[in-house]
Length: 179
Image 1: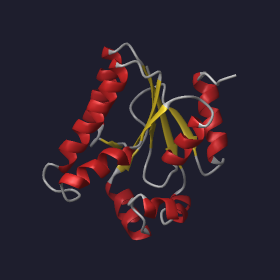
Image 2: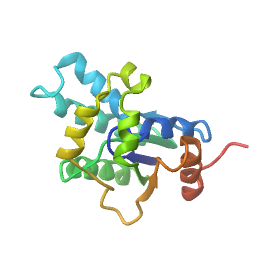
Image 3: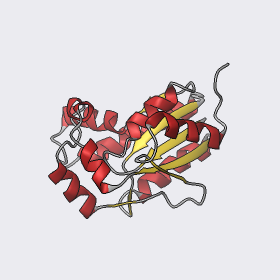
Image 4: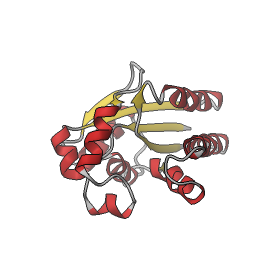
């Protein structure tokens, strides 16, 4: 299994790039918000137990995908240092245990571009962060950076549209494009 780990701050286009990429290559999507949406059915956002459930769901889903031979899993994630280092190490361990390959991609854009995107209708519909004020607080209180891997690809989503960024990822990692 290959785990394509698309990470970055909110509103950089992780899900948009993931969807564009999955139009080019066969694979499955594990969106960051799937586990969050599930946890919201049990807990209020950020309540005690909320993030533990989110982490357990993500790890369980990744383990199931790897154990059952899903060839490509595209995962979106808001990775912040040092907060998510343990969670990322857990993902790496799961992938390695199943003799898979982790392909890290850090997506970023300017703060101004993220502010333009944060209120778009798709984010509203998915119950994601949608206000410039909330995004500003979140960006100022977390260190969104590339995972600590020398092979992490860094792409600016403010420069190219999602399909071009997705194509760069496909080409960089030599992902199989159907004939």
